[in-house]
Length: 426
Ligand code: ADP
Ligand code: SR1
Ligand code: MG
Image (cartoon, rainbow, N blue to C red; front, top):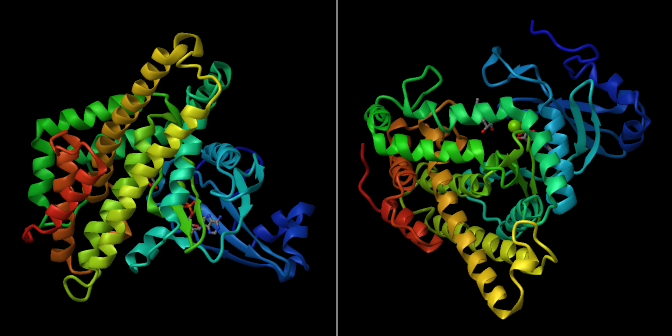
């Protein structure tokens, strides 16, 4: 048993009723008597316990840190305070992007647990995409979420004291940052006990990824940026498994990896997960071509995600009163405004390049690293899965080594379509 601080107890479906009943606000929200409350542990993520509780008047979610990584077990201890950072990040995100995250009702520091809004009938977006469901409102919502949370926590919106206090606080989330440093930016490019892949098909790919020094340079440059850049408060695990969705509502959950880092990490990870879904569709169709229309929807969504994010981020920048990083006094008059506008465009171009690199990193880690995605894992036919994965890895390599030739999001989609049209590897 791992040591835990006084006051902490891992909750169970049995002990949760008493814990909730102690606080009048929970009892009021759920209604009825504690014996009427129905509790289910539904955590399907890699790290924590998640309970859904329903009473006669309403429902709520209880998310509690375990003292270890759920995916692996007690042999991989983890700090409990990730729940604190998740609660803080959710509060900041709610402030800047209300109704695009679940509302936090209360954080219990000694139990490292968050009581939050129950999202229903939402489902995890990754699951919906495996079933080929289109989400017409998604791009609008996610671009608002990213533009609002990333712009408003950057030096383009925050004053220096607020920004530095945020950087200081979230630098306490260092163990979760270190997980990302290891499992995304290092292990997939070396021999490591954590790695796995669809063997034997991808054995040669895994060896190529270990031997290729252009990849070593590409991924290390990105790691350097991840380690040193404190551009904005990131969600830092922004993938389709961290999005709960219906046709008309989108919510981003699970920001426990939050820290001040490079904006491109959030944008690139999200686009990577849309790309993984794109290449995995071949493994979910009964007849080749059956999901062509769905692939088209994913491509359109990828284009809307980048373009919408860029437009909304720029809009916020153009409308802000004063920017700490670009002082008004330096950009007065028409010449100043023209220079500043050119700089805004250059900033977004650099952000696009960053995003593509981090996108490449997020593709490889899901195929050669420790934590895989059900989009690909659910493809039972291993040869077919390996074909989907090989196409994804080819795109990943081009992005990581900056050899894709993509200078626009339309180029990225054209690359995906060319790759989709290639002959199967296996
Ligand atoms: P982890 O941090 O372990 O990855 P998640 O935050 O991803 O945990 O949550 C695990 C699962 O719990 C999600 O996949 C989702 O099904 C469910 N869940 C989490 N938060 C909510 C919520 N607010 N409302 C409804 N279900 C939720
Ligand atoms: C040990 S890796 C676990 C992964 O799960 C989370 O969702 C993050 O993506 C992390 O890298
Ligand atoms: Mg999580």
